[in-house]
Length: 114
Image 1 (tube, one colour):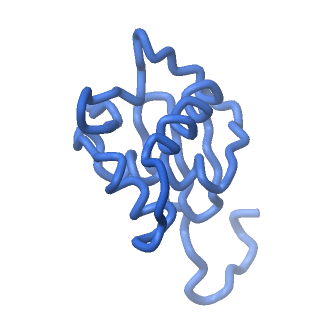
Image 2 (cartoon, helix red, strand yellow):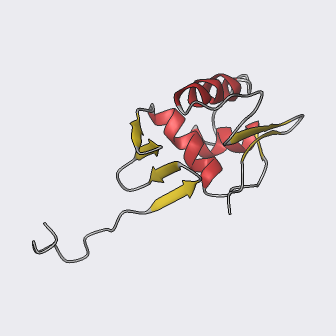
């Protein structure tokens, strides 16, 4: 496969990592401990918003703007529901999180991994 010709300008996979969590932005795939994690479009977009700026706290409003757009109106706590679903799928215990941390009174951040 490595010797096969590739089309001019073929995109390389762009992978973002946070410990054992890997997000392939081109393939829109998420891997945890080398196992593929099935996410909805919304869950993927939320994770992408967090992993692109690890260690940076994002408010619910910022996440809504990134995932749903500026025009979205409604209860901002919708983000909490989707974060809960995302945490379940990546086996992230909210009481002792490996990845997604709640920033009280603000929103969420992805743990910065060296």
